[in-house]
Image (spheres, rainbow over the protein chains, first blue to last red):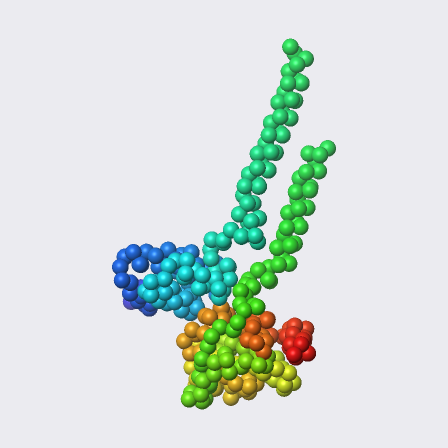
Length: 141
Length: 178
């Protein structure tokens, strides 16, 4: 009898998660539209829990924004139009992939700059070591 | 010699980076609004307790006003409430309450309990207008100039310092500019 307690708890947890994931039955016209919806909501940030995407988040705002995205898809808007709608209201921050523009050049170019810097350091240290080796070997010749 | 100093320099740089990170950690979660300098989003919302009457953005043209998004489910709105009440008492600016994603009964209970500092309350039951304003948390406050342009936005509870140092100077500038 005692073993039943954890079982009941487990069953409750199971049904809780089922009801949460089932609370938003968005209907799509076809698979392609559903794929676009999935792709868009994974690229857009939920602004309430800022490290989650719209597709992950269960915040009320994320529900509403998913509904907006769904409506815009239904009315035949393009992915760019949908992103613009959100950027005009919430700013570039809503995009997980920031656009390339003057205030993000550093962000986009930083990996390249670091790579070049690393290559430079490597080159200098290899040369130094080669020179050191050469000078220590020379007396033996 | 330089190989001894290099690790120290890198360490100092890392410490500097850490300090900068700590200093901006508060502002990192704040998102600059793209709406500043733009027209107020279009709205046409029923007045709380007077569903027959509705007000649009055109109804407010000609004088500066604050739009304060609030809801009965929002604990920070409760914290902010005395600050709004004090601002209302000074009659410095028209304050429009925007009750969003809320039920009229809950909104009224909240206003009865704490007092109603708003000149008028509008109801955005499904939150559609709050999305157009780019609201993602509550409370959020927008200052709108007489021509309907958003000139200032604050996310989170207003404080007396924000009102005295940022909002009221802007209002004074608007009124002397006319």
